[in-house]
Length: 401
Ligand code: HEM
Image (cartoon, rainbow, N blue to C red):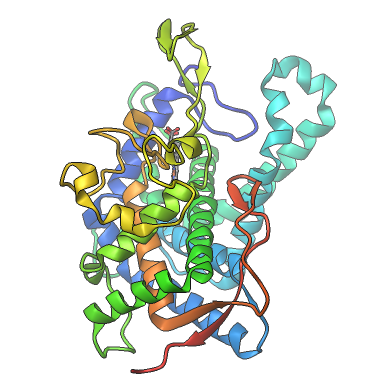
């Protein structure tokens, strides 16, 4: 695939674009920039906690997945477009971007010789064009409004104007083509940002919370550690700086990602030269992938690998005295975000979101299984590997002690 070619169904582009987009994302995902979104995280946390509480007051079980997904989506929309949009606008974006994500498999065939498939599969093409049009109708007005706001603020970052992902896309000069992104390309890239970040983080959140419900002792240990940091500030939320003081929370998140990585494989990679891997010859341009889940479950590397045991990440002697390195730069024991050049560009952001939301949900509420419910950890493959029986829980506000 050259830099001009793209995957027709997903609308994503080849290696050169990937590199550009990675640079753009690292600008928006730089730790100092991530910090400037703390108001957004607090806003979304309040929405999430309020929704959970309202639901729990009805006495019905809380089906957490839709709440988590909506919260993650709101947050990424804000990082993407820079403005707090109305709930209706956010829902419209969610519908159009999700439709494309969920139907991408059925359009993959259109990548094979488009001139022929345009005749053979013209109904599929029509359907794809319609989905893209619907997405444009919702996203283009937002992109144009952001361009206008950006021009008006003359690029100055003030308290009210925080850089958004769309700003970096609008600014970029494409070095080879000597032009800027056109609107259609910006629509594709913003949509990819939202899709890549929502299901992955939501899935991880659900698996981690399911284990905390299933194993109340682990939940209680986590809550006590949070309490030792937060003291009697029951009304306060755990802030980002507090997260560094709660090592058990980090251990719970890492164990969740090891035991239940949202993707059991990474994206397909391509070899740049003939090579031998594990005794198998792989020709240049061959497609390869990595068995992410199996690495995290390897009994040669992990003791009792199928047991949910966050303590394993507290024993630094297992990691040569250092904190566990998720990037795999020293050694690869698990790789839920991939490793190397293609590692997930949002690893830092995703970890922060997981720690922040899990920490605060446990700090504010006690989570219990529904009466007679044993919490099944059976899996199902969707866009990510999700819980076959989505988590339902009974939640109650923590009592002061
Ligand atoms: C728990 C959450 C997440 C997990 C487990 C995860 C995992 C991954 C994995 C395994 C890859 C493929 C790496 C490879 O092919 O070697 C990837 C790529 C990617 N991720 Fe994430 N991710 C998460 C969150 C996010 C978020 C929040 C965003 C955006 C805001 C994001 C954006 C992307 C993008 C754009 C790519 C494609 C990079 C490329 O094409 O080279 N991810 N992620």
